[in-house]
Length: 266
Image (cartoon, rainbow, N blue to C red):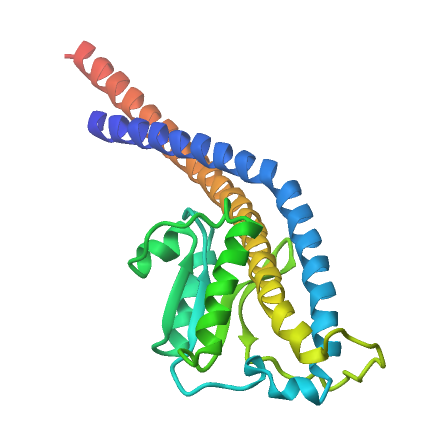
């Protein structure tokens, strides 16, 4: 009986320690949510503005000759954006599952967990800047233009709400002519195809940065949700263990009293 009481006491202590950890991690995640959401919204507005310009340019017949409008013959290049840390529910697992479903492609990883999984030098998703996005975009566009890849896409996480985030695949290149796109009648100097070819690396950089900021917002939201859930489970577990501990202790005391009473009667 004494061994059971000691075991329960140690278990309660261990779970309480875990509860403190989950609360601390939840608070850290909560402190990052507001800034992450602001960055997500601003980057989305920027990417949408660039997308509108590219839609207008790609509607031109002249731009159909652009190398960015034609699919190549090689394999696809996939930029995989995951988190820097774990303990975020299914956030990282869902991204990796989607990548696996896509089959074998050339992968470029952003986020420590993705870099570790695909054997690449560590690139932090939280610290990934627009300058990093633009440098990567220029490299990707040059490779695509030279026919190294048939398509270039991003696997990231889409923010739907505070309780829902889903992995998604977004194809960056080749560009596709929007069904609603119409030639604007604007005059571009020197011409539409030159402007489009200059704009595409900036456009791709905007989409890369937007996807990274949105994915990071999803990560911190998912982590806070996971820590809240873990905290509730830990509290419930402590209550159950405390009840078992009290019963075991009461049983031990009752047994001692019984032994004392029995001994005094001899």
